[in-house]
Length: 83
Image (cartoon, rainbow, N blue to C red):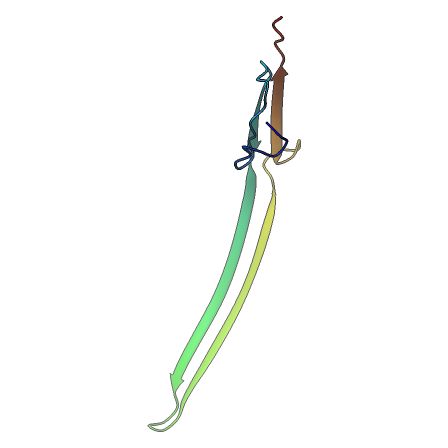
């Protein structure tokens, strides 16, 4: 089969078929910290005047779960050639 024929997604048809195999696993772990503080004040000064005050402060942090990082990958490959 010509190169590129039978390609679908990330896989491809290989002709002649071989016994090669590859596997991979990935673990991603991050931690996030969100802090937020707010204050609201609403006051009726008179029948025709109303005043409001709103203050807000927020922070966000993200990082690795461990000192070794946030992403671990393990790959394995094997080849089998039969005569």
